[in-house]
Image (tube, rainbow, N blue to C red):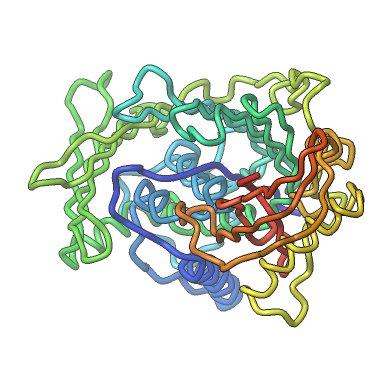
Length: 416
């Protein structure tokens, strides 16, 4: 087992958009690249020098609810792997695992991720690595500004499981995260220290990027690497400015700029600190979560409804129909499974005060106003009795989407 990393997400002001097809294509390309590396290692050849997408723009395009956590693994790499800025020569043979083991001496790392508009309250990440450079534990803290709908969140990840504490919602969610390791390996391929600088020079030769390295005569000053990427039809021009420690060859900060209206505008930076300063084990346990929060564990149950031979439009309607049929029958366990795996007692607490009488209508299905949810809206009307009064309950924003990491299953996720 090779534990990896995860994290989150996007530059709010970018005009870039994505889709589930794009997400699948990106992951497919990563796995294809890794397979190519295996074949090349067997043949004793070097990997190809395919250009890398600047990682902060990578975060921008990875906007699905899954990759919001996984894509920000990229922010670890620049700090985690020592970059040799002066040696452009490459060995004739290359092995990914050998390079990680030889160059990755960092066991612990603390990262602060600052946004230009929220510089006083950064996102923070704590990472513990195995001796071979693979990620062992991760803790992530996201402030309110990063996700107003969810509120402030704390995420811990280990052994392909992520636990997400939604402080504002009083909920602890546990999900499988098996794809994170694959995404992490993809990022390592793109940003490996023996390839990163040569890749920049290759892109420079192709006219895609300009690279400037400023090595001050004062040895106490850091080396500054400025990489300016030219814009394309799909990505705006970007610039990264890396500050590299002269002694350790490790990155201290990375500043990010986006080309807008003919000028490079500062959009944020990462600060890397506490290299190899042991992190308390409690940081990765979420022991601070209050005992009375609602706990939803999607790793121990099948959440939602299996699609079987239904079309996407048919299955989302069926999820809603079966959910309200379960409430009519007072089958709160089934209703909970259809509502993201919520406990039966919580469903009873939420809906037990109403008597559900009949489903009046379900649909028509409409696109969700927030595409990043990867869901749809399934409006419905049900007849209910409450306090002796019979009325129609209209839900115009009921959201349905696929269950995270349970392919072919669909769940209600909001709008109630």
